Amino acid sequence: MNRHLVSLLLALLLAPLPLFAGEPPPLMLANVYRNEIPLTEYRVSEKLDGMRGYWDGHQLLTRGGEVIHAPSWFTVDWPETPLDGELWISRGQFSQTVSIVRQQTPDDAAWRKLRFMAFDLPAHPGTFDERNAALQQIVARIGQPWLQQVAQFKVDNQNELQTLLQHVVKQGGEGLMLHRGSSLYRAERNDDLLKLKLFQDAEARVVAHLPGKGKYAGMLGALEVESPEGLHFRLGAGFSDAERRAPPPLGSWVSYRYNGLNEKTGIPRFARFLRVRADMNP
Image (cartoon, rainbow, N blue to C red):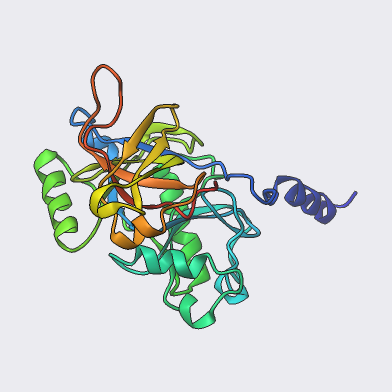
């Protein structure tokens, strides 16, 4: 067998296979930042208020594994290796981003507003610092304005971190992400990836609609939700009147803000609705 044929067979064997439709991609998920984290071990980036996207080497997928119907020109010349990133327009444009991405027939003009902000190479065997350098080369080689690399920074202490957080939030940003430079890509929630915001937030699944009373009679009073850990609690605040008239459907996922956890029950304190998570499967 000649050398060219051997190389071709190896490339086919090592190339990542496309995921089955509806199969969630193997993503690294973030824990919440804690003050005792050694900052010198981490790189810091802005937490983009967009929609998580995963390029499996063949197609774009949501966090929940649904196929994203991007125009063919959007992913032309993208590598066969997976890319982890965020579909993003600009700060404060989450709803518009989701509206564009969820369309079954892509709107070319609308997709021209979007960028895929890549921040990791899931299949690369190296550390995050090594993956970040390799990603820079991939993005530069492709040379598309809508495929960009998320900028990473180093901070030396808490004061620098909090100053950067305040600056990002003041400019309309959501918060910060911290990625341990020496870490490998692990498809699980761990301390190698951390998120830092001015408030705490999480996701839960809608299990019931509770009727409103008084001025909310005939509308939603509260959502009963279930956390990934199986805890049930209610979200009664944070809704617009339009959202109370047409609440998130049963089985859908929503984001909520909260202020710490009840020490005895573990239930979020002062939980209030933030938005529907259209990028997570029912």
